[in-house]
Image 1 (cartoon, rainbow over the protein chains, first blue to last red):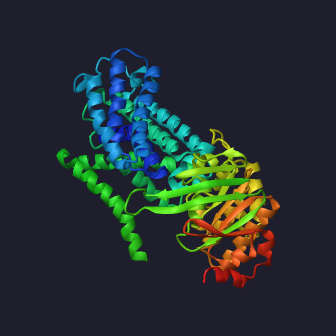
Image 2 (cartoon, each protein chain N blue to C red):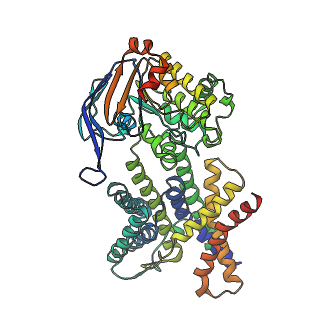
Image 3 (cartoon, each protein chain N blue to C red):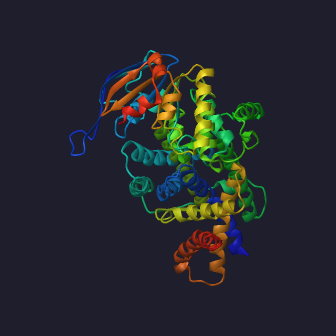
Length: 289
Length: 249
């Protein structure tokens, strides 16, 4: 049972990455893998500021700003220098490794004797339950903000930018600026995942972000499969499915561990699982044609 | 309304594949004029339209719209005067967004896209009434994604979207090229009606000589980046359809 509770908490922590990838990949149609770097950046900023005794209400905007800056950099390289988005993301992600290491000053920052967001507020005496409620409130607030944003005139223009660029330009939107804003938003959300995970696991590590983009991709692909299958058009339901995708993804990993698969094989299992959810709908559609 | 002065446009300058698409075009289009541009492939008519729209910027020369110098302005800055209908029905609308959301964006073409929710009951009612004027029965489908509609329906809606917000110039780039004859006729008739009702200045680029003959009150022919024929309303009215065919003989 422990596996699954941990998986649920992890899944909620990763909601930010899932929403970030949803925005960059599904809404803007840009494959952005700045994620690995901006996630660690969020964690590093959090750990560094916590050990310096900064309060959470200052750390949260700092983490959002750091992530947004990383995303905006990728966006600037992609739009102004006309460099392939994938390459722009790789460049920024690579550069961020040095930035993160410089900020940390060493490769690992433990947070054992520091109070975190999960010890600050008490909804329940059981620490795991307490963490769950705090995460739920946090993720709900973030989702409400993103959902509202997507409903506004600005949000509709965002969605149109990834969908029909010629149309939205003729309707008066500077698509370069819109993409930079979108990537900033996506990576700010990713950094928030770093913020939560660091405090949940009580340390920040320079290597914690390696390959983390698959968590977001997997979550979004699970959500997309469900969205297509259930013919969902509502923005709110789509966001809820993306969050569910993040949790389901962690459950599958927990299941793999609980049936005794060697943890060294976890990455190959992850890759295989993502491959299956991508491939299965295609296989079944093909046979019906 | 639109003044084009000594405009040149060269693509890939200095390379082996250099193309002089527009060679010193001077053209003044008056308010409420409906200009039709014909010409063979590669004559520069679409480039000329793109120069007006701002999706292509001129190599030299100047362009003014409604008294404003717009030569270096990007397309998204010219949207305050210009609405466009593209050749490809997919380019003028966002397929994954609902009809309603598409109309919302069109309704704020000249304004900032802010952080407030603009799709409310009053707006829905307004869109339904507008769409009902087309008589295509689409007014009850406004929550559907735009992509579920046919090309003709999408072009007709794109036309309607162009007059959702203040519009001075309407650019039509072969709007019926991808449509079957019946849809094409419906789209052209809708365009003609909107141009008259709203007193728009319009430019139609077309390969369809029947449309070129039927619509508009001025016609020009382009060849190799230059204007080689220019007929005003009187001469265009006197023109016979066969004369037009002779232009391409």
